[in-house]
Every structure is written in C-alpha cells, then in structure tokens.
Length: 289
Ligand code: UTP
Image (cartoon, rainbow, N blue to C red):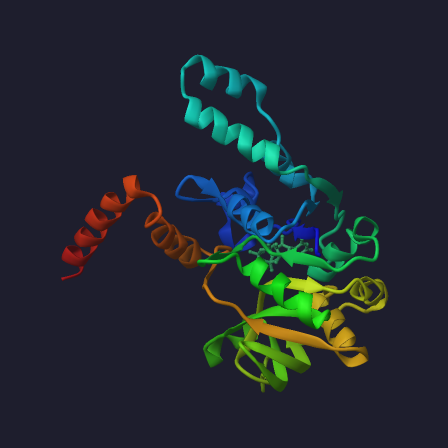
C-alpha cells in the first residue's frame, strides 16, 4: 500500500502573475476551495496518509490552510455557523502535513529530491497540484490501484495536440498492456522537434524509491533544471516504467484558461453557483452575436 504523497509546491507560478505575487499558486481557488484542497482530497481518496509539501519561503500560507484557526473556529461556533465550523475542523483534522524546503528553485526533480529522507525507500505518489482532475474516481487512486499489480513506476498520461507536445514530458510506447496501461521505452522533456508520440506526462505519478538515487546524481536538463522526466527515464532504462491513461478530465490550473475552465466545470457540483454560471454564459453568447 502506498501511504506517502509528495506535493512539490515551491515554484514561482509566473504564468499566473500578478495573482501569485503574494498568494501561492496552490491557493488560487476553484469556486470556494483552493487548488491544493482538491489535490489533497484526491490523495486521501487514494489511501494516502502522509502528505509531504516541498515548499519555499513564499508559500507559508499553505501551512496555515491545513492548520486549525482557533479564533475563526470560535467565531463560527458562536455565530451558530455549525456547517462551516465542521468544514474548517475537517480540513485541519484530515491532514497532518510535513513541510520540507526547497531552498533554490532548481526544478521539479530537485524539489522531489528534497523529500528523499521522508520517503525513506518506499514507493510514493507525486501530485502536482496545479493539475486538477474532474473525475468520478480519484485519478491518484486509479494509478495507485494499478501499481498494486505492476509494482513499477507509473506516470499519468494524456493525449495532447501535436502543437502542445513541446510543453510536456512526452513518452514513447513499448507495448500496450490493455485497459489504458502502456509499457514505456523512452521519454523526452519538452521536445522541440520530433516528439516520440502525442502522449504527455501529466501531474500524477507513482514512483519507486530508486528514482531518488537517480535524482541525486543526474545533471540539469532542459532549462538548466533537474528534470523529473530525466530521472524516470533512467529508471525506465534500468528497470521498467509504465504510463497510464486515467479516466477524468484534466485542467492545467497553472494558467488562466485552465483555471477558468476548471471553475466552470466544477461549478456543476455547487448548485448555488450553477444558475449564476448559466446566466453569465447566456449573456456571453448574446454579447458575441
Ligand atoms: P511549473 O512548471 O508549473 O512551474 O512547475 P511553476 O513555478 O509552478 O509555474 P510557472 O511555470 O512559473 O507558471 C510544476 C510543479 O513543480 C513545482 C511547482 O511548484 C509545480 O507544482 N516546482 C517547480 C517546484 O516545486 N520547484 C521547482 O524548482 C520547480
């Protein structure tokens, strides 16, 4: 059973500036919950018990989000807002996070490496909380369940348009194992030309702990950063790595369009916002005519 999840959250979030100048990207919200809330709940639904945030000095507000706010709780209680009171207690009560620091932003791979001592030679999940999924079943759970049978690293995969492959790690397929699972034989981070396929790695991974040794020894790759994709490729060459097409819709909430689309998609689950959404989109159509 996989019990640990690493959430690398030390990036600057430059695509969402100026919003992210003073607010961590992970606290930008969809309806009334921050991105990190959805991502952590997805992990909990997969049986994850230990959440490790790889963070930086500009991300302290994340710590507060998963802590109790005593004064707020008191005020909600006294005002008789019991539903909200219990919701606040629930957020703080479910998660007991561990925070490790990435002192310099040397890339995603470098961020994951900072969690090595907490991972302590166990398989673990990596969740990039700016990728948010609208799905029936937790996407992390889908990957973790598959890991139970293959016992090898698995990366989440999505088919992307050919003109978008240069934005992702892109994989090459060795064999189709059925039910959305593929054995991989190559992967390239942000290929400028000749992507090996149109299947891109998205922000969900189950990794075997050997990747930590690789991360400790590899050289910087694309963009001068220690790339997680490069380390997973080494594990693929030395052992085996799989890719899995999950069920669900992914939103890249690290950019404006993705966050907006996610807000619209998730509004379906909030009956009190749905009518406002329908009204506004009606207006949009009228204005476009
Ligand atoms: P991104 O590529 O989205 O970078 O990182 P970013 O800084 O968050 O956002 P932009 O591109 O500048 O807008 C993917 C994930 O890796 C983490 C980020 O926090 C994000 O969850 N990351 C990236 C780190 O933790 N450390 C790094 O050095 C780089």
